[in-house]
Image (tube, rainbow, N blue to C red):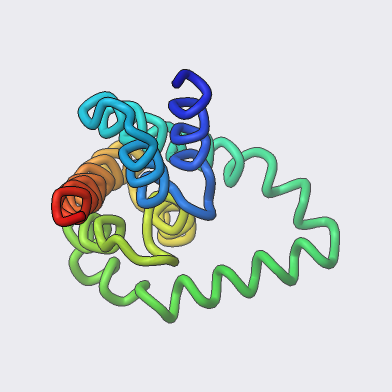
Length: 151
């Protein structure tokens, strides 16, 4: 049981799943649905400060390597063309909407990169990401619960 909670939390920290995978994983493993929501949500919220630390401190040193620099520029261009206009136009609420959409390529990792690229005030961006994560997690939680009851 503890191992399943740890795996759900790790999925929620992962850029390959976030809480969009952690919550259904924990619920389908038979864990307490309320604890799964809370722990996966909080784990996903922790990603923002970790990403900001990485982007502000470590990213600067990694850009000296050609492969990393090319990859980072590719991601930056995708972020700016994909949702940059909407985030710039709608500001706080644009970031909330971008993070809350429970689809691949959106979420706190992308929201953190957008915060860094568009130089959004960190405290506002933190709350926008947190609200977006909460709404996304609630959507996933309700959808998983509904599908489990339909089984």
